[in-house]
Image (cartoon, rainbow, N blue to C red; front, side, top):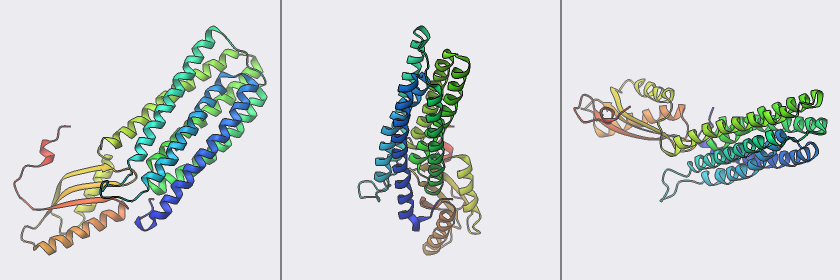
Length: 307
C-alpha cells in the first residue's frame, strides 16, 4: 500500500535508496560480465554485458529523475515534477531497444562467422553471482515501487526482471555448450534474448507514453472512485470523470451532483468529505470537484468523448 502524504519524506528516501542501489548493482554486474565475456568469448554473455552497460546509464538517469521528480510543486509547475519519471522510463526503453538491436546484429554476424566459446565454467559462475545480485535488487525495487508508486523505480525493476530471465538462459546455454560443444546454441540464445529485450522495450515505452499523454487510469481505479463517491449518502450522482497519472500520484476531476437547494457552505463541506474519502484510498491524489445541482440539463463531456 502507498505511503500517505505525511510520509512524503520517507517516500523520497526510499526512492533515493532504490535508485542508488540500482546504479551500484548495475556497475558491479557490468564489471563481472566484462570479465566473463573476455574469458569465454560468449555472445550470450556479451549481450548481457551490453545490457548491463546500458543499465548503468539508464539507472543513472533514473537516479537523477527520482531526485528531480521529488521536488515540490512550484508556481510554474503546479502539478509538480512527477512526470520526469515517465521521461526517464522512456529513455530506458530506448536503451533497452538499442541493446537488443546490437546483440541481434552480432548474432546474425556470428551465424556466418562462428566464434568458439571457451571456459564456460567461469562464465557460469560469474553469471550465477550476477543472478543472485539482480534478484536482491529486484526485491528491494518492487518493495519501494509498491510503497511509493514511483513509475521510474517500477520501470527499472521491470528491466532487471528481464535480466533474470537473461542470466538464467545464459547459464543454461553455457552448460549446453560445455557439455555438448554446441557453439551455435550460444548465438541462438543471444538472438532470443535480444528479441526479448525489444519486446520489453516496447511495453516499457508504451507505459511511459501513456503517462506523458495523460491516458486514463485503469478501469478498476475509475470504478473505485465512483464507488467511493456514491457511498456518500448526499451524493446524487457524478459525471465527466477524468483521471490521469501525474507520475507517482493520481489526479481525479469530476462533477459531483448534489441537492440543488443546498447552501454553498453545506455543498462545500460535503465535497470536502468526498475528497477525504478518496484520499483514504488514494494517498497523494490531486482532486478537483465541481458541484452540480442534480437533474440539471447541460452539455456533458461524457456525451462528447469518442471511444
